[in-house]
Image (cartoon, rainbow, N blue to C red):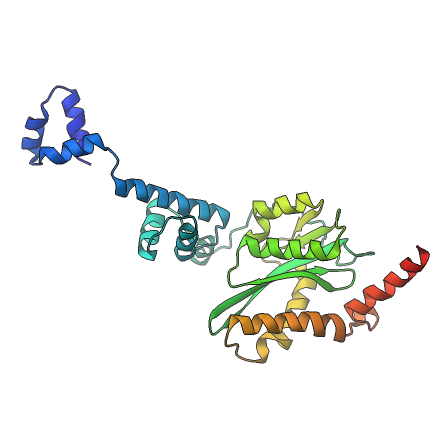
Length: 291
C-alpha cells in the first residue's frame, strides 16, 4: 500500500530516492511495482472472489465450503481457509447462517402469489402440482429429495435426489415431471418460499413450459399440507425404518418405495380405495373409449 504514495509524491515533484530514504524502503521493489501495479497474487485473489460471488448469487444458501467447491469447478482452485477469508472480506454469508443468528425468521421475497389458498383439489391431471424438499441423515451425510405431486391422483409425477440442496435439485424434479406428463401448460406448481423454488432458473423453467408458479406463506406448513402428508408417509415407511449406511442405499429405498409401494400397492381412501396408478388408469379408460 506504500508504493501508490511514493508514486503520488513523485508526481508532486518529490524524488523517489528522497521518499524511499525517508520511508526506509528500497527503490527496486517500487520500480517493479511500477511496471506491474497489480501483483499476480492480488489478480488471482480478485478472480477467486468473483467466482465465490457468482456461486453465492446462484444459491445464497451455500456456505464457504460449498462456495469453494463451486469456484474450483469454475477453474479457480483454493483452500477452504482461503475461501473463508475471501468470503469474510467480501461480506458473503450463507442465508441459512443468517437465519440461525436472527431471532426472527426473515421472509423470502414472494416471487409468486398463492393461487391455491389451501384448496388442494383438481378436476383433471396436470392442473395442480405440489412440491417440497425433505432431507435425512445417512452415515455419509445428508440426502435431499425434491418431489412433485399431482393433486388429482396424488401421484408423484417427478422427483430428484441429491446430496446437495441447491436450485438444481428443484429444477431437476420439475424437468423430470414434465418429461413424464407431457402437456403441462397452465399447470400450477405450488411450493413454499425456499430459495430453491425462488431461483431465476426455476422461474425461467416454469415460464418455458407455460406453467404457473404459486407460493404459500413463510413458516406456514398448512399452506402445503397435502405435500407434508406425503413426506410424513415417507418418513414413517422408509426414512425411520433403519439407520442408513450410505446415500446410495437410501436413494434406492426411496425410489423403490415411491414407484412400487406408494404408486402401485398402497390404496388411498381419497381415491376410492385405489392406488394412484389405478385411479389414473380408471379415469383414462372412458376417455379412450370416447375418442
